[in-house]
Length: 451
Image (tube, rainbow, N blue to C red; front, side):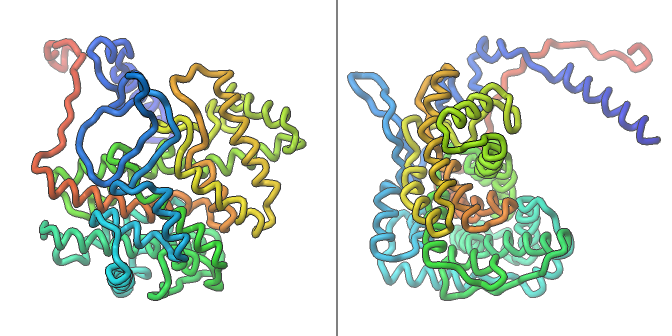
């Protein structure tokens, strides 16, 4: 079969798949099916209970639901209070946040020290794992590389089938520890073998925080400033958890409910997070701003920037998707608390990096975009900057390669996934099995000679 014949067959099969796979959208309303597990207003269908986090975007006023500034709570604690606490005390917060998510309480200094030492102790890979696994098949797709490494680690775990809570907890904590190594080493292998750059494989520092170690592993000279590490730490805290209803966390619950092992569960969650509708949005924000600077002659001119935003909505600019990336959220309306926290530190980092003009442009778009969207689109709730709006900018200022933007999300969210996996195991004994409404008519079987 030559290339042309193969393509013709594939084209025909694609057409057949499309013809017999398309469902009339009107049937979803007829059968009251919640597409994507959301109602007509975009509100998620309640499918479980959780004590891990809480997201608030509205409040009841005179019997009506009214949008409010977003609130995110980890184990009942407001994320803004949590961040303010460890920042005020001069501590890195990701380890403390991970403890809170996993065990449901804030650690004492002694408990935090003990847990941090445990993370450092588990932050190691099997002998020759980097050489034999990570470097053997380098890929520009870091999420697939990360998932492959996670699944391969299962081969080294002699207790993979031990479903006791203690064993699964240890597996989760180990993966939390090694995710930065798996991701950064995967990038270094790709950067060397595919791009011809120098190869750097640094060992983590057992005395350094997770955020410090990420920068240490990535930078050729292992150096970083205090502000860089602090802001990356805040990014990890803000991305560590966001309710049980987001796609990758729900995936964690679904695969856990089947009785699968920890490595398979986390690989499935990675596959979900990889999707551009979930974890890849911050890359789009950075690319969108790069395109904006290329096509707007004066980015300080309010009218020119507004005109570009209108072109985005009209599918005349950037990727022609009709989206202003980093604006709007499935739950939040007036504001995303994670974006509010980030905003407080972005300006300081932008000044340190000599990117004050970029910060001013981001601030302008943050103010303009909700107004432009409200004028152009019928929306049922408010639109505001989400966490992706600023996180991509922060990562670019930290000189993190685009290939690591989504893996960095995973390095943080593994804490939340682990907490939800443990919660599912403790509280559920049934496999998650949703129902789909069949809408095809019965047909008779036709013998092959009569088709």
